Image 1 (cartoon, one colour):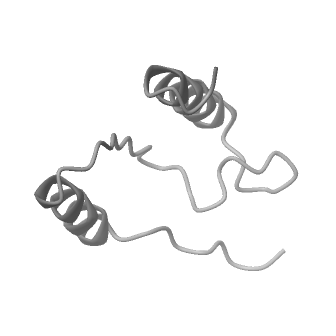
Image 2 (tube, rainbow, N blue to C red):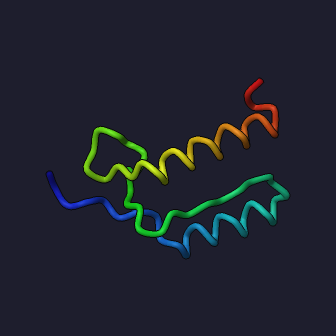
Image 3 (cartoon, rainbow, N blue to C red):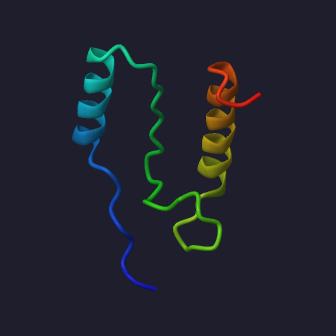
Length: 70
């Protein structure tokens, strides 16, 4: 396997948060220190089970809270 792809730089995440807030958009962010890009892909070496399960759970809860999912 090749070298892991770097994630999105924290400065870009912060800029996105600010832009969404300025536009009055609802969003939540959670970073997982030490989890590389692709940490949710269970078929890759970058998979991080604990972070992936937490992210999946948070995403579903957010979708339900904002009625994206029933």
